[in-house]
Length: 87
Image (cartoon, rainbow, N blue to C red; front, side):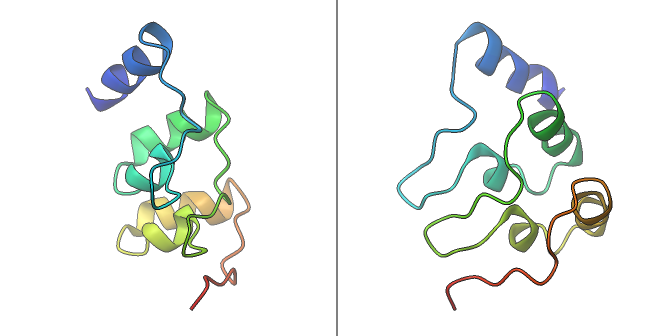
């Protein structure tokens, strides 16, 4: 289970779920295609779904192909569907 692996990395290995890569992306940006991980990171790790990467993209931008996650982010997390990136 992907969530179990994520939980292990964060809880046991003390990985920072808020850390960013060179593109400014958090693990939440990278997990955008996996609803179970997205929910875990937002609900249990308190990751910010409106955090932006270096291009100004939120997680919502990264999940555009995954309608179930888009609905969750808009309806449950109140993400702004009108948020714009740097382009």
